[in-house]
Length: 313
Image (cartoon, rainbow, N blue to C red):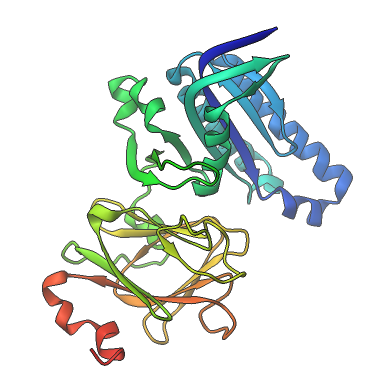
């Protein structure tokens, strides 16, 4: 029987499963992934959702209202966290979740429609442990639930002409976790960030966030190199600093200063401060890796910008 209904669609993807197959072997890894996905699906049943299907290392579900979908997503993140604490084998796995709401067509237990396509594509914009949702999902939440989401503004989604306004569930990561260094850099709040790759020299202010770096022509900062993913990395404004999140399969690497430490982001995030270089798919020290120079700007001091001086401006 075919039905057309307004529903909230959820996609969840278990990241790190490929490494499990490499370290544990096919049989043991398959059993562990299947067991983990089954555990996550309990969060769907517990929150009045319908498990549409499992997708190897992920799942698709649908809910009648956004509130139940968000409760399910939060419960999934909790279940995986608890499992990773109990099992060393799951220590490096992470969950990406995306939700969208709209009219769907239900046929023989499966769902089709724009909300399904958008939710599936939004997984490309979610970092490890992140839950991203559309504005339509946020509109259906309680005031307490809405307060936990931070706007990422409008983002171009592959296969869709109109940009999608998306939000991310605030995980409450402190500055120390975001920097991934033992030291926290604090200064007056920056006002913009400059990105330079070859002749592509642009300055973005905080009102233009987020900025997606990627090969797609729909990316905010398009880097036409085959080693770059369609949506490779995302720069967000976190209220007092710029945060860089890796969205790729090949990794994003950040070097602070001319010869400073290089930080490897594998679906993780870090706070950007000062000036440095972002390597896409490889460290900035590798000559073949596409490298974007960045500088966090206090616009009143832009005339002293190291990047400007390097370019002789």
